[in-house]
Length: 471
View 1 (tube, rainbow, N blue to C red):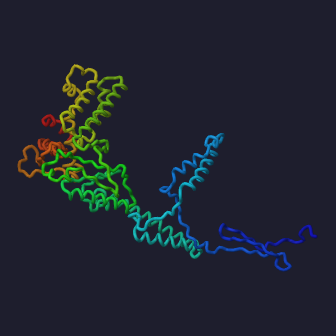
View 2 (tube, rainbow, N blue to C red; view 1 turned 180 degrees about the vertical axis):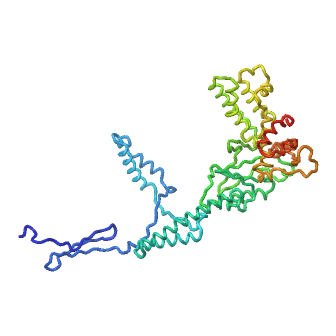
View 3 (cartoon, rainbow, N blue to C red; view 1 turned 90 degrees about the vertical axis):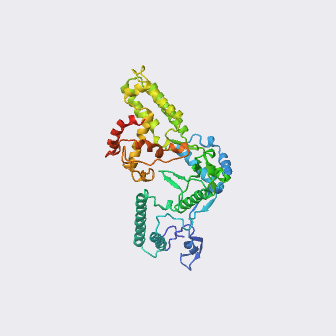
């Protein structure tokens, strides 16, 4: 018997196995009188033809109750006792993944045909399909790595190019309202940074159905562009009461009822009030709630000033009032200007309390305090802000947008100023209080030198001297 090898052993064949590639390996007898052995194995040739599909968790069909029961079976206090953060996390992760297998099924991740971004052009789609085919051939060894790299670079370059072009088109067409999002819409749309307002007059059954058609078009647009509305935040605000409708509407009972609308097959809830950009609009559109809210905020700020500031001198209180308190009484006043005398007095009392805090003016009346401090009452301040906004729409930076807000008067009488506006007649007082209506009479009374101001700064300076004759 030979205890050790007399010559070097040569390895003629080395077998390496990849998972699911070679099975049923059997070692047979020797080959004749040599020391070579017979090896039998099965090669799974069809495995290269299997197309793997991405599978993901189907949370819609998850058994949440079973998941909770399986998780509760683990004694967490005992299992996590005397373990560090890393060990505790690894234990929790293993249990979570094990429970997930039994309670959350898997599903194939399919992409519906035709649901692609609007920026994906036909040429780019052809390039992407070509890249996919080249990648498949590269895996099979039919093409070189350089060919696949070039195809991948072309797709990346094309994708960046179409995205840049889409963003450029959106920026150019945003003001002109030419985006596909608004094509075919019959109602009025107001665009904001993160939401949208759609409005329409429901004075007939056809106008009522037009709003529903517009909602359907918007929903179709979101499906095509892979976007969704947050339906939980979609509300309907009916900005008119039945008592305010004219007698011509009372013949049709359907128009008196508040109609509900659908969005993607779901009913949209009605809301008595909505707040946007810190302005509260209710169904009566009289802005009383907004006036009360503004007065409440201003009073809170005044209370903070009185509690936190010891000095009562004019040099301290007046800048604080102008900077942090008065903006609550004037913010967006062109929209929610008070319509009733009680609301005006409610807001005026806030300024009355503020100027009363200043030391040395206790013996003066409210009007005398304002003159001493160089301030206007709130009614004059609101009128001043409204006229400044009107100047911007008529002769300033917003002239293009103001063409549809105000109408020039067709008259040869140019006494006062040459830019006269047409005054409309309305049955309801609520319409007379709108910014575009209530400013017309005051604008027509402005002197010529004020209206003909070459710039906004000059207009503000000249307007201060003319306000005494307007209010």
